[in-house]
Image (cartoon, rainbow over all chains, first blue to last red; front, side, top):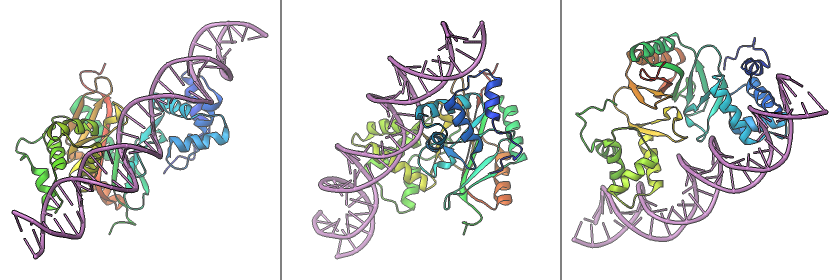
Length: 148
Length: 148
DNA sequence: ATCTGTAATGCGACTCAGTCGCAACACAAT
DNA sequence: ATTGTGTTGCGACTGAGTCGCATTACAGAT
């Protein structure tokens, strides 16, 4: 997962402040968890980690904050091919979209940035006269270590 | 939704037979519903329609049959950007993959077949040494009628 | 046509993700 | 310090999907 090392901690918090959105204790905890994540987390994992920073955080606050971040276009929601149950995973939305590849055998998630994907989105917007807000490409299959 | 008119009714049933999979009443009803669908259906809708053909069909049989068809690679599972709740939608898997575009305002689903998408998948398999089993590209945004 | 092993089914109870209404609370602007 | 409004925790709820189990029904062999 190529997260840029140059990322400033508290950036999400800043982006919400810029938009005039109120900052609170639980929100700070949740944002911090999302920012410092080293893998894709689901709502339950975010809740658990947030509680180590602010023990009072409630499940519904996690969901409400995730909704807020989605609406603000600051995070992306992923399924990761539902390898583990029906829930969703979340990650910071940074500059360019990337493709998620999920290995159906070992569960490894690989991310991939592609110029062709960018072209495809442009083609889509042009040919279909469609204004893209969010694009999600997920692939299931077998990674290099697991293919036979 | 560009379903080929040349499609033989009962084709899914034939494909399962070819693979030596047992045919039953409830299964026939569910397959028939999927084959004759004119829009994307979720499990609950499939259940309701299947019951008009065979009143005894149970919810769990629908889920089990959908799992079977997924494992056999005969249907695709879609989220359609979760415009209506958390459930999944299903459609026959025919030759080439297509992209699903969901309008965030009017809810219209548009399908799009793209040569670039095919290239992208080939590039992915080559560059990442990844064997693709299923690829799902979903886009949310505003359709031509709803963009402003 | 009947028998029979195995796969599929219906049922009901269950899990788990996510939602909602509401009273209490806390932020930030004054 | 005060206050209005947005946010929170709580608890109850919904809806999708799962599971174990006793029963049923398919399809191949006789």
